[in-house]
Amino acid sequence: MKKISKYLLSLAIIALLISPLLFSKPALAQNDQFGLNEVNNGLNNSLSKTDPRTVIARIINVALGFLGIIAVVIILLGGFKWMTAAGNEEKTEEAKKLLGAGVIGLIIILMSWALANYLITALNNQIKP
Figure: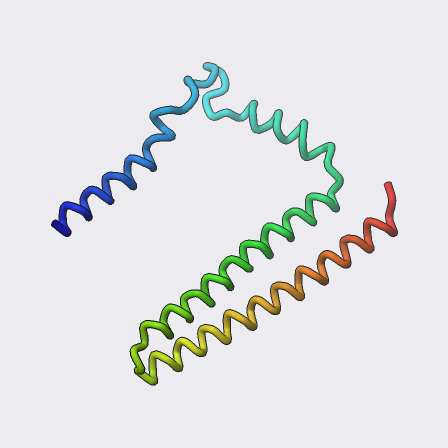
């Protein structure tokens, strides 16, 4: 029964990965085989009109948000290891180290976000276009 469920799970994952290919748009124009015209139109119409400070702020927010998610996952992993340690001291110590590292990482990320937010706000108030 376990083998069948593994095969079904594998089949479902493969189906999810292949489904965008099956239900995608029709083929692009003959002279635009790789979709470069759409990329150029996107670059010309969106990035050129956006203030570079705004783009940098968005990139910083996305990067720090991603790092925050990783820190929370580390904290959850430490908690899970602690719960499943079953009294084993080595596993408990390893879980405590993971929890400590995750919390310290989260604090550093939050402080970085606060500093970056403050600097970007200060720059936007000082330099007005």
